Length: 72
Image 1 (cartoon, helix red, strand yellow):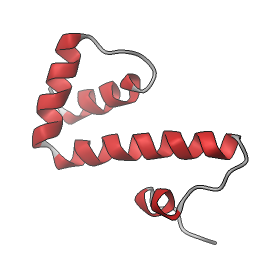
Image 2 (image 1 turned 90 degrees about the horizontal axis):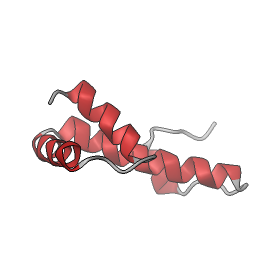
Image 3 (image 1 turned 135 degrees about the horizontal axis):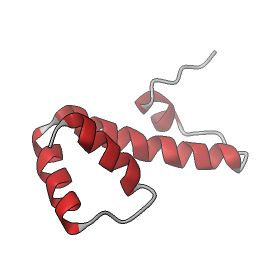
């Protein structure tokens, strides 16, 4: 599995349960690929932060720094 397929599965995994084979392929690739590992972490942080924005909360400093967001 290549990085493009993994990033798509990482995104989909936030919205639906993946098949066993997809989960296994994803886990193996992410263990070996730091770029995809980072992408997966960033997706989780962005999802949590966007939920907080929708609720009127401000993201934490960690969320801001991990997504590259800067204070204006």
